[in-house]
Length: 367
Ligand code: SF4
Ligand code: SF4
Image 1: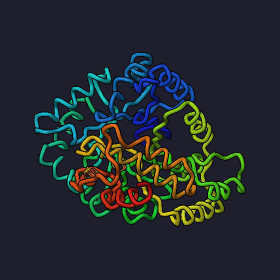
Image 2: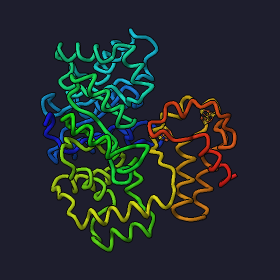
Image 3: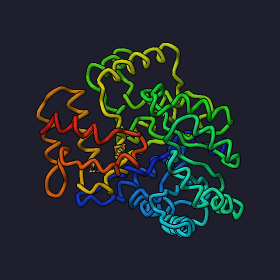
Image 4: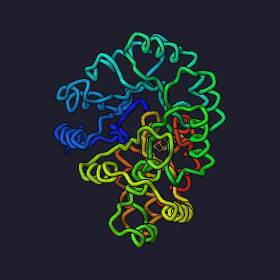
């Protein structure tokens, strides 16, 4: 394997202070706990606002360079011209305070972005940086179907690893295609980095009647531990990323990953049962990546409105989801019904959600 760290600290959802800035002291404590547990893979990206700088302060400035590995990514969102590919790469090195990346990824490839990354020469540029010693291993993160994954890996044999969205809920999803993509990566013999193993936190807090099924089997196991163990039991998985926001989440995940126990066949059947029950709730599969928010002309806080809807579907009609919905509309933020169907959000959604139609359901539920 290219990394000996089975667990990776995803730096996309870092803890915030009262002023909504990244809480560097908290991040430092989490980095220390993570390193002390024997893990060393840190995953940031140019488009994770403030993440690279926070990682520099909490990790790079405090630990020897050879004691940790950094994965960084270039996203088309940050590129308006071909020349900016080099500018963004060098800016990332500067923000992180390093002179090379252990892992570098072309970010969130889908059919549309694949063409644009090729047009901008991203693969060639990254390969040149690898030859120059500024990238050790080159990969990409992926959000599309298995046919495209097969095509990209066939056209780019220089790719060292792939990052896929794998979790038990999406395993047989026709949209995310977790199983199909996993099988393609295995066929191409590429080590796999898993993203969204807990589905943006959705699998860490399950509706009561679903959680009870897990608790009846093992009262001590957290919901997140089931999700991590599921993907960690798959062959070919190099590193599992978790975008942790609190020391509590980190402590729970570290407890699972330090003394890793693969899923047995009885547990696999239990997870299959849970998946069926959960999917029957018909919630919205938003991972709260927030890629859709910046471009919305009506400034609709799409993931927050979806979270309110999911909460209501999962837990029933309590006052909580409606209050949450109201807190995330108004004062410049549009209602779900104010969507003008421009489609900008759907173009960037890595989960391929039909956001316009879903917002109509949200509006019908809360307005
Ligand atoms: S389709 Fe609606 S929600 Fe999406 S960006 Fe346009 S106005 Fe915003
Ligand atoms: S709707 Fe899509 S792009 Fe927006 S936060 Fe959810 S998953 Fe991300």
